[in-house]
Length: 125
Image (tube, rainbow, N blue to C red; front, side, top):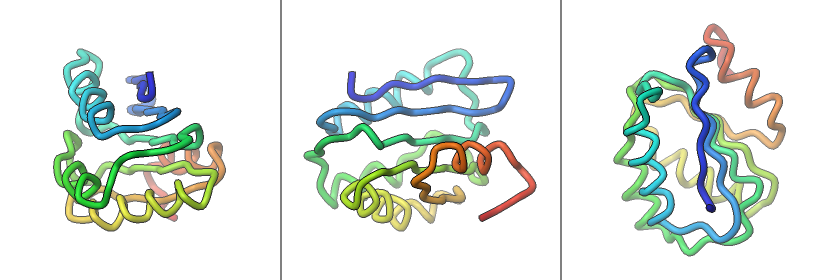
């Protein structure tokens, strides 16, 4: 499955992992599934790990569409972890289009730095 998630209630953290050829439908299905999970809380911080995405059919309009439909509360930290220039470009586009959500976004190339950032509620990058 190109999108999977894990919820760590003790850390108030959701880790979403994307892989392979990513589509809008897969993202939307994963959002619905995670929001319906009994462990889900809309105040949890999120790591979106896209390092294993090889390609994507998602276009600008679709990114704009999903960026405005978050199931998370304002104030949530969202770390986007990337490893390629393409992933970084898409992450920046998503970040800019999602700023009205009230989430705090940061793009990382190092997973451990992303994890440290979302778990440290008193520090911002």
